[in-house]
Image: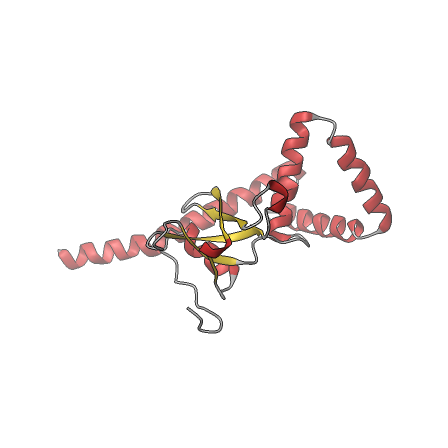
Length: 188
């Protein structure tokens, strides 16, 4: 009986992530198809991906840069819209834009003796403009959540990690359950 329970639990561990992933993907596909009114499952996603790619291509032109600047100025005049638009734009640029900010994973000592530490990403290497010349801004993502906390610490409490940023993010967001990131050069 105990062996059957073990097989059942193992089956849950293998089946539930697959089922949840399939269900979420199906919901996204059918939602996009519904928005576009396309009867072929997945066609809406392909049209959306092609459209986003085309906008990205056109966005690289001089003319599009002028339009984007004008659009940014227009939205900057609307208080709530400005906040939402600029925060979303900054977040997208931080992850996938030309000015990526999550490229420098670090280990931050939160206590003086270094016993309490957290993983994060340097987002500002200098806070001199805020009157804190010896400090850096470190974003520490929360586990199992799409949120995080910004901590300002002395540079001396930040130790760069020679690891792939996406591996460190996966490790932190999973609450340490994902594989431990491998250091690239073997440095501690």
